[in-house]
Image (tube, rainbow, N blue to C red; front, top):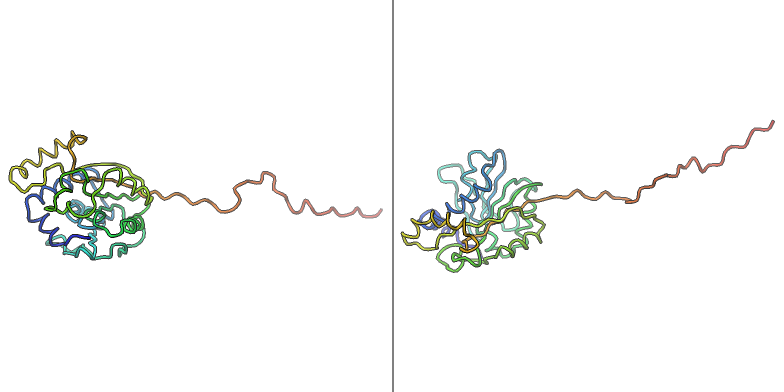
Length: 248
């Protein structure tokens, strides 16, 4: 069940904790993908807060929002790039996407396999996707006061296995959002410290979200026909009888 777009907008843009979460996750995305010059960058779910760094240099930026969630215009004060779509039927050409980000899309999906099939379809050969989901063992998945408390959370192993089953190749595993999910001023103001500390002791301190970067590797098809190579092919003319010698 998808979250409502108004609730997502209010959390990320109108609460201090939402801005902390937006900054923590976006900083990690920019670390993985510093630039996307002349590339097509697409976000699905409610990934638009993470796409702003690419608006200037990317060839095209598109924010896809599922029908069950609703859509809002984005970015504010600029030409709109957000589009309402069906979960497994995106208005994009096959193989046109270079970078794809999923946030609040996979864990709330009614059919994760169909959604990932659509991700595979739109990614170009060698394209990269970044899947972001709530961490099952983290504090953010245990409270419904934030969007990360809705849907199905994952462990890193579960997410890795699901993506491999769909034909993706995992490239990098990352974590983010170590700040406690509290709206109190002390926790919000200490968020940078928690993010720095979490990056150093991630095996001890559970993160709020898991991130896996995957690639689409398209293997060359096998050539049809016999695999065995005939070393000495038969020439048809050799089998014809030689003409008889002319009579003396």
